[in-house]
Length: 174
Image (cartoon, rainbow, N blue to C red):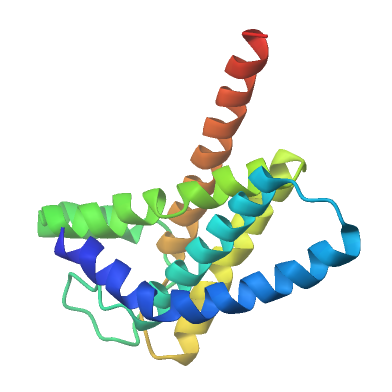
């Protein structure tokens, strides 16, 4: 629970400035188009606010549960499974394994809801967001891990599937 509170506190500092900038930018764009889709505007704001929080935690967060060098780079896929099995550390499993999946579910869901695009493009966008975080962490001497990229992308796919399933359910009730 403390991790979630820390996440919100770190994000909150950046969210006020972001919100001001976002409102001004969207006002300029909307003024040109003169059409406002309120649902889309709210989803866009949530998506970009979520990305801000994601980058805030990924770049400034301190969620290393295991004892690793801060500049560790893992290029061996699924090493996390071995590490969890060896360590028997439930916190490490929850944060490093499940956390990396769950934190990217909103990416797949929101990209799918906001933009009408093919599934492979939604997955590609989520993959690129995750890749940009991992590459940024290289330059900040933070842990960079191929497993994070794999698990984040899996989260995007799950978010996409949730949207597709809910879309099918809504269209079958009409």
